[in-house]
Length: 199
Image (cartoon, one colour):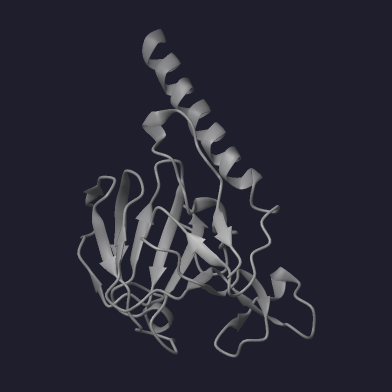
């Protein structure tokens, strides 16, 4: 009984350390549209086309609790990346498929996957043209999850990358850039580094 309790406490501690190291680097990152973004989720360095945060872009909703200034009253809950239609998105670590499609289908298209990371966050991949995993599936690192598309509220091929607390609803998104390079939890360490390069 004591061994089982000790193992359980160890797992909780590791999860908290991993989560903390992801969030620690979030505020330091100041990416701008046009930055080239490298990630474990895709190959190449696509341009960042829209950042996380307050905006005046008409497709986005107003989220009053975000307290955006009057000149940028809307809020974008993720980052957008200028990937090409058909580009594969792969699992950067072990994860679980929570759902494919759902209540945000009007915005993200009918095939967007919601993926649960082992330390308690969900990643949503919006506008994909095809998802090749199913709800409940345990996905290993390197497995193709979906292919970039332009479904939902979209003006062209791109990927919307959004992170919410596990089970979080619309409006609960957090800064996603620390999750571009999640380390496998079995490694015992996490990297919050984000490779960004100005063109």
